[in-house]
Length: 380
Image (tube, rainbow, N blue to C red; front, top):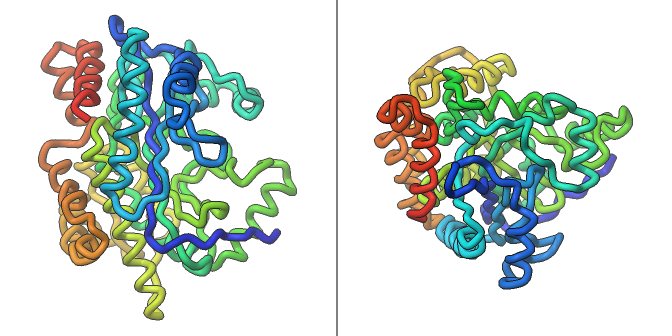
């Protein structure tokens, strides 16, 4: 199977942010996306965009609205694009008695009670995946980074996989599930991988290997479209991008900007390495799989595997070393401030830590956690 990879300008960005709609009084999720999107279409038709270039759109569940940036050259441009869309969404949600919440999961709403958006592809997904599909009460942030040559795609994917636990730990914001503390920093990470073709990506030496995999998926009926390959990190051929899908949804645009900057800088570094004739090291799949579990379980306290030789280090310590290495790249790309914000996340605690602190301060009352998440969103 021949899959054409669109040629993008190197290191351009696109951001996607999934946001939950909650009842302002109870904090429960509200299946109001249809009404909200209809209001936006009537009051701000330009904000909706179209099927090819959406700005504000629905998702699998009717409690979810996704914000999508345009193609941007800098992180700040992408963040401000999301902020404009957020303000439009907020302006129609609040009159309907709705608040906005962003985290990897909702702390206490029941997944089985959530209504699915009435679209054929979503109905097909739920019919096929049954119980697991009905549990997908999860929210994420996706970062696309442009690649100017298809030959870079698989090596860049390999490189990003090495830093999977860093992104997972920094963004982890889903410790609670149906009112219980799971003991994990990211419940979302382990839930999402239950879907067919979701989870860690397979790694191939070149684009032809990826094309052969996709052909096998079509031939055996696993997928009907390449978008059904739901890897945590995946190439998006139609856009000419590498898409980082590891991260839990985060409550502030400053955090999203930091994650976007880290992604952009790493992809740019890998691109330069390849252009200079270098190679990107890989780790055995069992190391990668273990790193994902450790980061989902322990978050910023995870001790991660660094290389094929099995060397280990605390993820926060290795992240600080990484930031120092990437500083010159960030300065060139214009995202030095956003990249520096990664240290702020480490210092103040990731989302899962802050949610647990709020719950503890309110004797386990998770409505207090929802109120705090809503309040954080209001600062954007």
